[in-house]
Image (cartoon, helix red, strand yellow):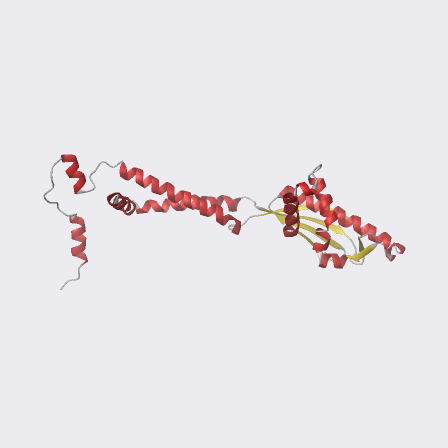
Length: 248
């Protein structure tokens, strides 16, 4: 057993430059991952005055500015999320799909945002991995934003004035994003590196054990069926050792 371990270590030392091949699959993975889009930003502009209000609850309302300042109150509204879930999973009761419902909540919380880049423009944005989900969420919340703004306009004193109704401003904008490195690639990279390392080590074992040359005096004795009285050392190592000694 000890001889085989020494033989394996010798094979690694002899073919140590092969170990550089371990880096090839991880490098290929990084190049391929960074070359294709892995994030999408999906945005919908809404033409709306910052002075308008959005309907809230059965008879209340809140300003557009307040909604933008605390978007989670609008995005994670229980009724709104349940309605969206029913749209995405028709015929599925929420209580039967708690995991799916939590996943939807987390997706909205982590990827959706509402901003107001100017006084008359609200921006509903999704930034995440799933392009189709992003489009669905942006369309849903854009329509809900407009609907609540129009309901708020009816309930509030603004209905007495000539106020433009909120409408979608242009089409949905979709932008792709690439990155050389993202933290969620760490686990796949570690797995690829581990598989690559083991593949190279197995390859070294195959080459070493397929080498018919003798590796020790014991192998020579077993092959010749004769005792070994003595052996010459590796002269290359002797010459290296002699040349490395300081003169004098």
